[in-house]
Image (cartoon, rainbow, N blue to C red; front, top):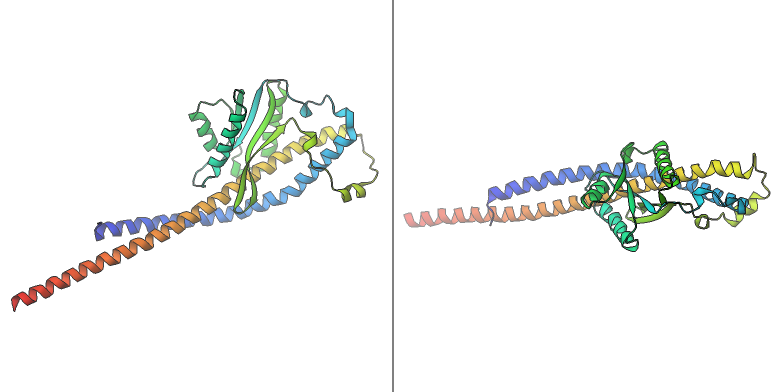
Length: 293
């Protein structure tokens, strides 16, 4: 059994861990609130521009043919954007999205894949397995992402798709649903699937009525599609970041609770051990006094 000195050392260590994890939980909670507000507030705009693109697809009809962003790429490779975290201590956040990637790899066995990576954890994972990483995105850091940074990422993927090397662009990220629910998700970023675009609600269609498009539908469509891709990228990066901090908050809370529970157990063992030593010393004193009589 551990000595009183050892128990004191362990109690001190557990107390320090409790303080650290508690501080990290509070930081994660504060950042989560900020990123959650940004992610939730970006959803209506993302949904509205998606519905607008869907409406323009209906207006163009047959004129949509021949547009490269709506047709399968000419290349044979698949480009994958993998979104993970730069740091650990966020529970199963990274392992879940990486598991989703491996399941996808099994379904596309034999496919030639190039990786575009956001987050050092994903970069380290792919490097250890000898996967080909085409581009590591480090500017801006995911925690500092803004619309301009997301637009650069979207532009990078569009240029790669139009280069004739890739047949499609796939994104692996974590969709934020609630404070305790964040789902690893895979989406086809390019080519744009017109059939998968969300249709406009019936009341919105009725309110729209006859709309005059200026300068013309094709010009407006060509200007809207890049904004749609940028908005979609911005939204999914924000959701991944929000999911990361939600997972980190839960992980640090569990670690704090575990450290507190362990500290209480050690304190009980320490008090029992200390009481045993006191009792033993008292018995020795009483026994010595009896011997002197």
